[in-house]
Image (tube, rainbow, N blue to C red; front, top):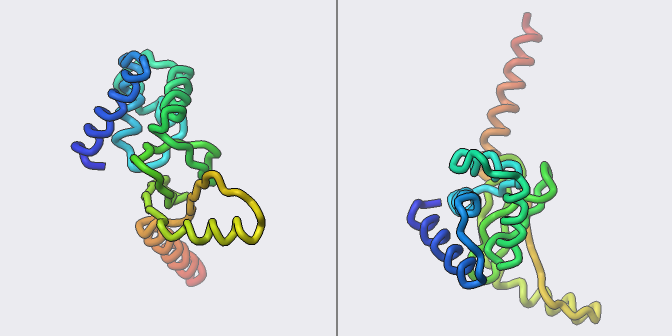
Length: 165
């Protein structure tokens, strides 16, 4: 996340919160900053730990309440990862879908414009009326794939050395 886009996101969130009558307390601003600057899905305790660097007296309950507010306003969205059930990422304007690396937690957005046809076909076949959808693809990013291969290679090398001794 670039500093300018994080600052733009924070400014957009400040405007949305103020328009709904929410105060911008130091605690709330710290939570906003952590989420705006992260390119990873973070759970509430991770957000709490990072935000406490800015506001040492921050309470975990404040983090949960802030996350509930931000989610209700459509500013963040929940992400379900393998390691922890609920994490959060900044919601981008418009509808988006997510790619989530289950190893490092990084998140990428993609449009999925061609999903409309699939949803119409499924609705037509099933008689189901699709009102909304949420798509999250979970896997390994390129960096983590390389790291896993390197770990496997190191493990194999170690086993070979031990076998020779």
